[in-house]
Image (cartoon, rainbow, N blue to C red):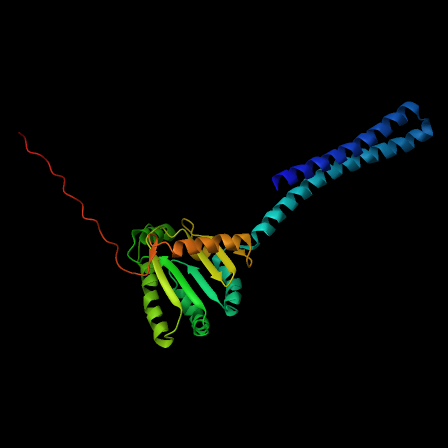
Length: 267
């Protein structure tokens, strides 16, 4: 791709230089060999060639850059960039209504999301939609650190922990209503760096930024089966299937007892 772009720039530049050279040549020949009448004509033609070539060169360079950006966007299948996740939710909720196969989520806590869209999610589950959720261990120090980073006050109220602890209760309720529900939650013990939402083959992704609430962070939308959607979907599969990364157990992490150093007495 870079080689092709370089060739395009070289060809366009060469063509414009030829155009300007022809204009300059006409102008010079008019000055040397022309009379007063022809001089006006040749000068006008020559200068118009030069100015046209110059404007074309500037415009071509700008258009090539726009074309390069468009090619990258189309290649990765990026459909939109949302200034906040809250704005993104307006679009993702529309796709959620049409979800027919699977719903994959990486989020810190989902209590507010379930409160808002619980009926829709339950309806999809009852119709066979597979739901997989990756979230942070509620007892993890990483979760507490994220709450500090997001609050701007360097305090931990426990709100994120409560939001995560809500999930197993919700899962138990869903399985009680729908015994054949294909729903699973797994927990990880690393810093929650980003959020991910896959609705069928449509993907939404965004980082969790320092001193910004998760709903206020920038987010990206990728189309069905695009390079971007495939990249994040495949990465989710790697995380989901990595037992060193996540587990269905929601237990407090084991604390390693520090060994007391043995000191030898003075001989």
